[in-house]
Image 1: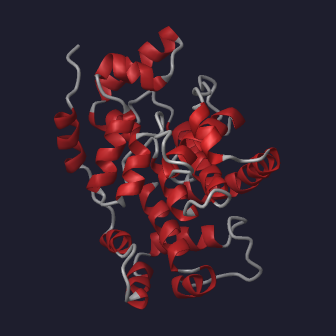
Image 2: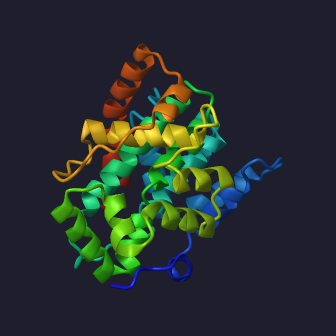
Amino acid sequence: MTVLTIDEVIGKVHDLPSLPVVVTEMLNAIGKENVDVKTLADKVSRDQALTAKTLRLANSSFYGLQHKITTIQQAIAVIGFQSVRTLITAAAVTGSIAIDGKSSFNFPAFWRHSLATAVCARSLARHVHVDPEYAFMAGLLHDIGRLVLVTCFLEKYEKTLDCRNQSDCYLFEAEQSVLGVDHSMVGSALARHWKFPLVMEKAVASHHEPDALETGSLAAVVHVADAIAHALDLSEDPTDLVPPLSDAAWDNLGLPEARVMETLGETEIQFEEACQVLVGDTAG
């Protein structure tokens, strides 16, 4: 079978739907001063489905608020614009790529693992001076290239899944063997197409091979969170394998055992409720 070229993949990525305009506007506001938050909040509020998902997540154990939030504007006032932007983007991303019922790819397991990695990355980030909201989004997106491959190259990806099952290898190894590309490369192309910040794009691209020279880097956080999420088996995928953990990435985070245990507990507590909100309508 002819392997894919990255140019072929990028061509397909550009054929995929873009995120809602307001989400792109919010992402473009990162790092800018004088952002018109009220206008952005008003635009989000016009999208009822996006608003409903965002508010459900804001009111979940994810933020542990004492009082119920009922509007996007109120959410911004209580948990901040950056956190609300993360929730809105997560709600948009999880509904962005249509699922093909013909595939044997385990979509529920995919989204469960992606969200588990995002929740874990957010928890880890708070202890290592990495932006927690960036960590959540990079964690959610880290495997998104697989959705591109299974959506745009269904027949080829089925052969990848067969290779994984027959060889009992890691799925990214099967991707490289059968397709000539893997989901990390494809995911970074999609992140670029969706205009995510460069630091997130790089973290998606290198989450299996984090840059050991960058102490506490976002890529290292996502790499470790990915391994922890696999180890906790939150995907409920019987074929799941825990990927090799980079000693350099682990050492660079420098987390004491108490912090690690705290992260494990936070991940398990926050995961299920967040999963019901973000994945419930996407996984089946």
